[in-house]
Length: 258
Image 1 (tube, rainbow, N blue to C red):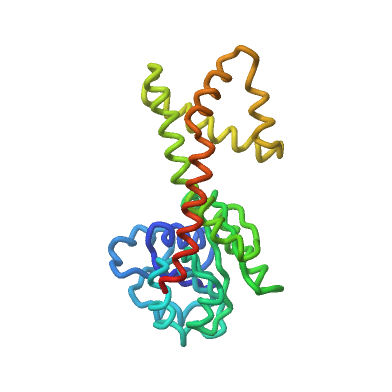
Image 2 (cartoon, rainbow, N blue to C red; image 1 turned 90 degrees about the horizontal axis):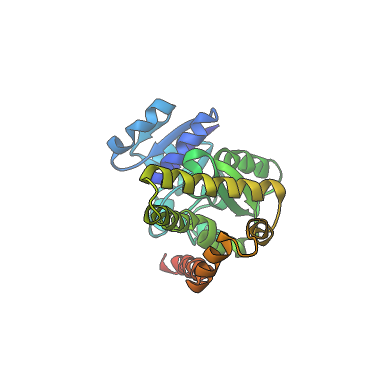
């Protein structure tokens, strides 16, 4: 397919790269083309012309900031008439997107793990049939994707959209804990990363609840229960829940600023 990615920033560039590696023809736009030239080695063409890219494409990805949605859609409206348009602009509902252009819209939220094709991407749309199959195929290039009711999209943004940032804070804590216990820096980092990766894979493959896995590790009078006690003292679960809630609320506010 011919795909235009409008907004080749960090995540837009990752999307363009993933789609090109899946065999699609991709044009990515950004104002400062020189910052995106690295994409050319993956077969992505760069442009600063949103109108031309949109006119050429079969499918358009809007990888832009929420406050740019109105401006960009008004700019390209005539060139995306009745085309499939996938917006990853946080907080902007389908009804708002439709106000500015007569296109077949999908609202999606991947995360930065698109870079390594391990994103969780949720999407909402009123489309069915062939369009739905196309959307699943494209978003599947990024990792795992799942269709959800649009009412859940702000929470998805607060959880998995912002989630990699929360995970890095947690990982830093593990790494620093290793350093404090005397581990070399490279050992502490590798041990932390592989522990996170292995735990996630174990939970995915066994379909166990995290609490069940935790009970496998905790033994009476062992080392883990002392560590868990300190985590409970620090209210880590409460902090994470508050982080997701705060990001969700911010996502809801973004559409009001259009």
